[in-house]
Figure 1: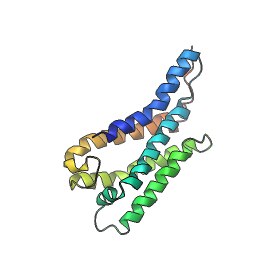
Figure 2: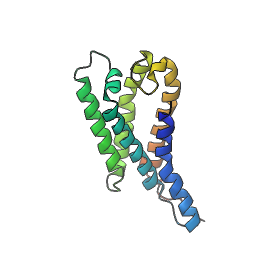
Figure 3: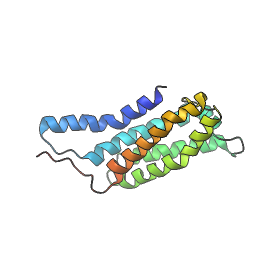
Figure 4: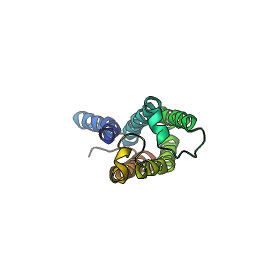
Length: 159
């Protein structure tokens, strides 16, 4: 189950690199900017999964859901849009709020897939997968809220 590790790496690497760079050069660190960039990289990764692994994503939805493949592509495009806008300072705040909504709205598909051992990315493990996916979702939501949305997170000043 490499996917959660990839997600966490993509999420944290821009902020970690910027943190080290800011310490070396005694600069302020714009936490929101680099946390948003990491989130943007993660969302672009999510988009790629919707395109490359579309059939596995379709299996994550109950059979009674109409237009499952179209929904997968549409949600993938939504994730791409969020990912791109997270790199644009003017739109980062609204994109981060939309990202939280996506995490919450899409989570039932993860529950369905895990309970029915369908789909991809570990869902075949059944409910055990939720022991990994649930905390990962909480990390993603917390990262997004506390580092990208919350208004008082702007810069780490060097004293």
